[in-house]
Length: 96
Image (tube, rainbow, N blue to C red):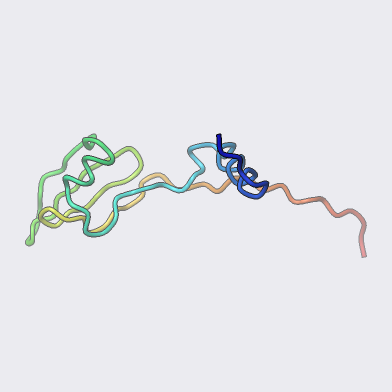
């Protein structure tokens, strides 16, 4: 069993306690292939027909849409915004 140092253990605990919906979205990167995307994220919920010249194909996933030119990722657009976790700041009483 590996023991984490205090800072690493605190970071691991912080990551585990942040709700999944509030974590950054891991998404396909520029120039990944369709095969890479399918292997890492599974089949898309929907494949939209290719349009334009060069042909651009869109794969729709629950939290993002992947745009392909031929077989390569051009861009990934997040469709549900990332919401940062709430931070509670200490209340400072008194006035000036």
